Length: 232
Image (tube, rainbow, N blue to C red):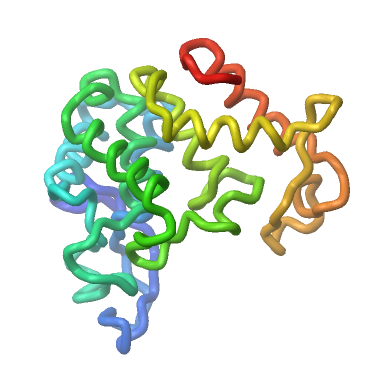
C-alpha cells in the first residue's frame, strides 16, 4: 500500500523492455490489465474504501471510452501498449474492470458498467470477426480451464454472472449453456486446457475431473440458476 500514485492507483513492480516502449528496468507502475485486480484485492481485504480505494477506482473509470476500456498504462511505463489498434478496447482490461465494479454498489448498475458488459457480449456474438488486442473468443477460449484468472469462458461467464440484469440476454445464456453441456453424469467437470505452471494441481491435467474447476463451474451455475431465465 506504500506504492500508490497521485491518482490513487496502486503500483506493482514491472519491467517493460525499451523496444516495447518501456524503460527496460524494474519500475513501480501500473497497467489497466492489472491495476483493477489490486484495488479488488483491497476491497476483498476490507480495507477502508473511502480512504484507500475510491480515488483509484474513480480514476480508472475516467479512462473509459465509447468502445470500452483501452490499453492504458501509468506514466512510468512510457508509450507501452499491447498489440492492437490504439482505438480498440482491451477486452481483458474491460473484463477485470467489470469484475472490480461488480463489488462496488454505487457502480454496479451505472452506464459504464452496462457499456462494458455490452462490449464483452458483442465480442462473443461476433467472435469470428472481432478479436481486439489478439483476445480471441474461439476454440481455445471455449475450453474449460482453471483458475479463472485470464480470458476464457469460465472467467468471463463468472464475471458477467455478477450482474443479475443479464438474465434475459441470449448471448450470456449461450455461454452458460456451453459450460453446462460439459458437465458429466456425476455433475463434475474435466479441464480441457491447462496452464503448465499448475500441472501439479488437480486442474493441471485433462484426463479426469478437477474438484476445483468443478467448484468454479458449479458455483457459477448455481448463481445463474438463481436469476437467469435461460434454458438450463
